Amino acid sequence: LPTKIPRHKDYIATLHEHLFLRADAIRLGQPEPTLDKILVFELLIKSADISNVIKDFTIARSWGLRVMEEFFVQGDLEQQYGLQVTVTVNPHRPIFIRSHLVVSSQLANPWPRMA
Image (tube, rainbow, N blue to C red; front, side, top):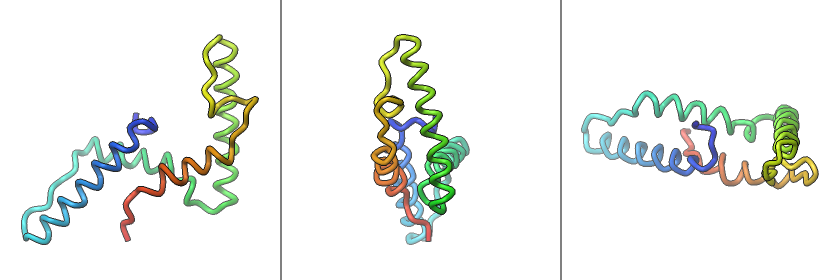
C-alpha cells in the first residue's frame, strides 16, 4: 500500500530519480522519461495521505485529532485481542505532538518542491 510508512523513502527516491532524469533529458534535448501509471497513482495516494501537514492549522488539527482517535481505537483492539500494542496507537501513552512532528519532518518535508 502506498500509505505504508516503510515504503515512504522508496517513493521519495523514485520520484527524485525521475525528476533528475527528466531534467537531464530536457537539458540534452532528448525525449522525457515517463512514469509508470501505477506509480503515478501510488504517488497521488501517498501525497493525499500525508497532505494534512500543509493544510490550514484548524483543518489539520481537526483531521489530526480524528486520526489519533482512529489510532487509539486500533490500540484498544490490539490490546483486546492480546496483540502487542503499537507505540503510536497506544491510547494510554498519547504522543500526539511527537507523532505529528515525525510526520511533518520525516514524511512531508522530503517531497520535492514543484514550484
